[in-house]
Amino acid sequence: MRRFALAITLVAGGTVVSAQNWPSFRGPNASGVADGKPTAVKWNAPAGENVAWKAPVDGVAVSSPIVWGDRVFVSTAISSDPKQVIRTGQYGDVEPVADASKHTWHLIAIDKATGKVVWDKVAHEGVPKTKRHPKSSQASATPVTDGTHVIVSFGSEGLFAFDFSGKQLWKKDLGVLNSGWFFDPDYEWGIGSSPIIYKNMVIVQCDIQKGSFLAAFDVTTGQPVWRTAREEIPSWSTPAIFEHDGRAELVTQATTFIRGYDPSNGKELWRLGGNSEITIPTPIIGPGLVIVTNGYRGVQPIYAIKPGASGDITLKGDQTTNDSIAWSTNRGGPYIPTPIIYGDLLYILAINGVLAAYDVRTGQRVYQERVEGGGSFSASPVAADGKLYLTSEDGDIFVVKAGPAYELLAKNAMGQVIMATPAISSGVIILRGLKDVFAIGPRS
Figure 1: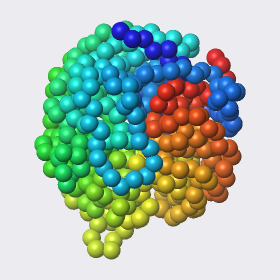
Figure 2 (figure 1 turned 45 degrees about the vertical axis):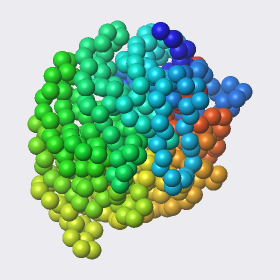
Figure 3 (figure 1 turned 180 degrees about the horizontal axis):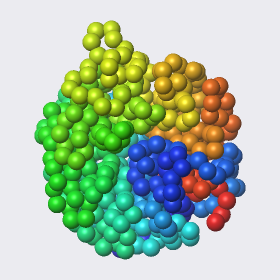
Figure 4 (figure 1 turned 180 degrees about the vertical axis):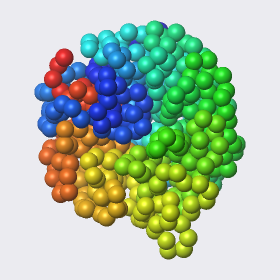
């Protein structure tokens, strides 16, 4: 088995999280915030200035790292064809990448203090069962952990569970997950939704060309807990849990409806129509609200949904609010990056580098500015220490001061393509490029 000398340090999530764990895509409930210690403004990656670690990682993968305790977990997919790459930028053609070469799908555990590989397990070997989008990979879903189990989805290749020693605990065949262009099933783009853990269940959102579903499995045994059919075309959004006044809602978004479910049994609680044709960003939790956004051409909605909704809460006619929706707009939603709530502001980053800030409680726009020299953005923003970190596909990290006025503090070039969302913990910023993993900040 091939080993990888990954250089990754501690990452953490949430506003202030005990043990500084970052257990899932963009931290707990995808918050993307890791306050508590100062973080770097400027660094020089080629010169190694302010770079704690840099190490190569093989494969083509856009999944993000997660951390629990003294372990960092990363997934990757390695093709036997060394010419496989990712195509960056903004383009209209949607031809998928058809790579029929043999792949190996890996889950890797790293000591977060030293960057040394603790174990490297091959979850699956074979030829991919679906094609992929040229911006994506065969390892796009971010792993998730509860501190005992590590769950990783490789889409059509299966859902896998490992313990912290690297022992595979169980595997589930989810079927062939053909997520692609709804106008033509031959345009297979691969999955994007990451698994989440709620209590003793791992939950997956599988919106595909035919037979979409939401499913929960026992995190310890892999046994099915519930499965709910969904009348949906393909989507790439990761679900989120919205807890308020003792009620938990599993919030999913897709083209036909944004929906809330009871996470204990998969029963639908509410639905909201009026969405983009292609849905990617993850719902995020705000102050007594869940924010759901999308930015594909046509309608580009932002919805601020109140807790406790029931039934069909779709807005009528020119409505922008109702009993279940605090505020909304049909323009301004992002196409790929998930927004972030930091302080009292909701920040939305468009794929073309336009950054907008809104009052999260009222929806009033505070500012809208284009990030200078930004190019295209697929990674989601993260925040810490009063700063936003915006990562372009070209590998430039733009540091923006958080607050009601736009102020660019620095632009830091990493020298390679970056599609994955960064992680931040204890003042260290983890950046995963297509060739190397970087830890920005002081050495431990």
